Image (cartoon, rainbow, N blue to C red; front, side, top):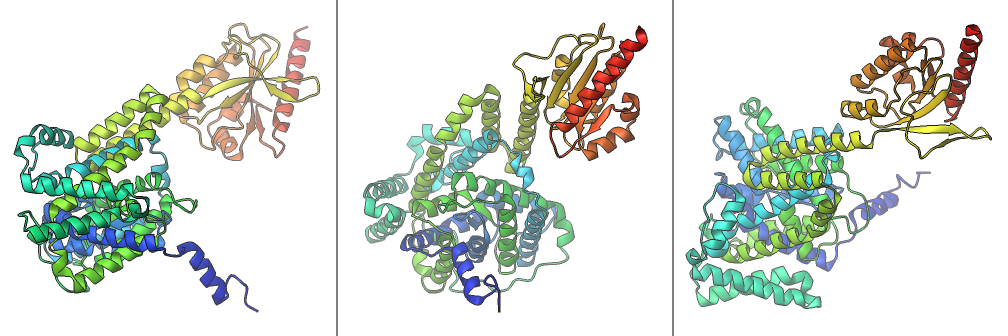
Length: 572
């Protein structure tokens, strides 16, 4: 008899549980997201110097594959402006034509392979070290990039400036340069959205209502504004197979890693911004692998590299997406639009898209207000890291901003870990149990007595000054024993901590005292043996950890008491 888990009915039930059931809101959200993929995908590709149709096709297969497999349920995997610009830079550095389908396919497939490999190797743990302060600054900066990317579409005025903040400022003070027709269309789009969004029953379809209604009015009135067809014509055909150029691949190895890291860093901001509605947990490694599969599939069918898109996910969520089916519908619906209504889609006004993207970007920034306030209340150092990451994201190439954010996260981690490290005194109660005390470690080791301290930290080299300051001095510590409990120490501590232990043991021994390490795990025990510290501490100087947590401490205390008794007896 088949086990229930492998029975066809059981497999279908598990699959339905994972995928969920599509709702009407998911279908609507998918349709809105699919429509957004026409102008937005084509515009991103065009800005980066690619064939605009390749940006359009990035909204067909990648969202379907990504949404079906991603642990982050609402994440929409597609082309973003940062990915497009980074991809163009990579091909330019390699001296490859960005309009050659084989080169684009090679890059996209290699980016997918890198993402999939990172997911399988579970390298997503690297992003878990990115602090909330840094990620908040990064996500807010990306949202501002989304806004500044459509200022020209919304008002017909392309602001100048070498960074996004300056562009936004020049756009605001250059209001006299805004063109009347596109500005009125964008304002009308935002107004229609706001009115529809204020009606509870229309809230989920407010974006779609605004897009369709204003587009129809513009067509009826014959308003002179830029349309989607001004970017490129939409072919009435699905993407065909595109073979990667294997000759280009050796030149794209490093570049594929760059594009993958930019995409994955962007996607890492989707999960905290859009938590799973069903309460399930996201997985960074699973998202890595999911985006890898999306690029492997999309690359073979004329798509540019893709990643988790905060703006497209924001569109889907604002339109009412509740399950992963919204992303699937977006890809399928876009394919249908391309096949049967490409000419109609070409008539969507760009100011309409600009107005709605302004709404989405504004909602993303507004949604971050609680995180920004939390970071601001946490510490000055976290606030500085958030502001620095935000500034880097808005003023530097994204790949450089990612490196800066990673370095800032590492510095924050080291500083916080160093601050948390401490030596806590323990005392033995009359009933034989060990308890912590509120008093700090003694300034000087008392002679002829046992002092027990437990080490709490991560053994980073940054902890060294703090630990040295809290270790009791050894002057006059004759026949004194310091028992240092190492139960929380990592298997492979910093070499600086090992040097501190060796140095302290030497000075304590010179004063006629002794150091005992208790609760040492096997890997650390082997390391102490290899470095000669075990021999330096002498017999009983290293007490291994045992299943009973306090047993090594009891043993170390008994050995210390016996040692003191033997020493004082011999001195008499």
